[in-house]
Image (cartoon, rainbow, N blue to C red; front, side, top):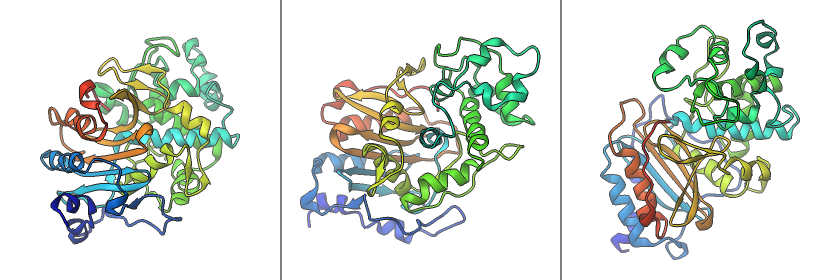
Length: 364
């Protein structure tokens, strides 16, 4: 066997030897495998470029895991620093893309009327008060998903004060209006936390229970509990824990139009609309749809879930490719780390992508 192919086979010897800790969680038995490790002759991705991608990834100090699959088959998988295929990681704001899927499912099941439903209908006691800015009554479920609520952001410099408040939902709704609903993109985890509250009220289940029943368990795993607000609502759009392989399954679900192992989990129309850009980030120019980021690479659409520190699920529909990256998430940002990950995608995974490399400045 050539060294080149050994890079790709990835029996994960190092990962298998890594000690498990409280953060580790093995997958439950899965449905018939959708993502498998391919035999060498079946791989379509360029072997040399994949080897170089692995080498580049190995040189990034904060990177912990990388998986690339094509046509549902794993062609590259690397871990370091104690990471492993079955060890969970905090995916940070990549959770927003999972939450978007849950909203789409809830709409299909009739719990939510659609993206145009005003959020005031889910928080009647708040909106019955006097003095509420009338523009807030026009905020819709879709506005929250696309970060176009018009509410001042709870993220960045205001994040600490928001998560230290006694009522995260009230604090998010109390934010002043700084634009009209449907206006410019104002990235805010407060908006997605409101979606978690809406899911909880609409379905009568916690976001965790609904996510496990409708999404995770049909894909063969169980989400572990994550942080909740003082009222017990699961944090919407942050701090979910997934293994790299679970992240890959989620990306494959969206690559396949919402179907996993023959099961329709997410409506196809929702997948399509979720990744269609509705606005763009003022920080990096990336498009933003309904909980998913997007950009072009080599003339091809790339849409992705993105979490703080470098947690990514990239989907390249034209190439039938999914790429997962996990990184250290509990330290300050390392300059250049995010753009280096995008560079791996552009230089080695997407033909011609290097000619149109996009920066990755900004925060998630």
